[in-house]
Image (cartoon, rainbow, N blue to C red; front, top):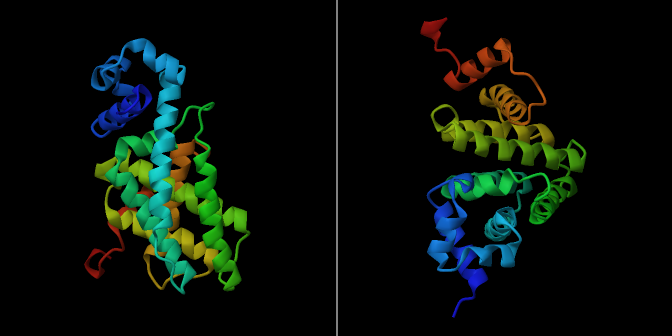
Length: 229
């Protein structure tokens, strides 16, 4: 028989399948878990404590998926596979993903460090193969920031940023930049524009002026055909 804590966590996860964490009331959680309101406070301290616990469960699933990614003899290709599995998890679990990667300042799930460690381990393989041209830590920060940025923008503005080609473009641009494995593909420069604009918009670390918007629009449209020139 499940405990009250298990029922509360399961109820919150079920509600997150269809709505954002901010839209879920403690009353709805209690009704679904068949517990009284005080039980949430006994078990988790407050609603934020509950949401942090659910985010930790989400990270457990996220990391389990990461560990199942195949490891081949091409570490750079494996980075691309890991990027794509990250995006797939976000699209399959939109509200849970947003909870995981937009935590309250004092409620950051410790499992994010394990996600970082897994990425650095994959980058160590690239370095051992002579295929890493930026410092390890910077490479990890660049890839994870861009990967999360692409996912959050796709979830928040699917009409503008939901096209799978955008993710592939940014993926190839960022991974190519840190590994020196740029492909002969006109999407690379556009992908860098997308990555910079997405991350700047999300973090507020860089203004998005008219020039950036124009370049982003051009990147989304793709190269002009001969008839347009």
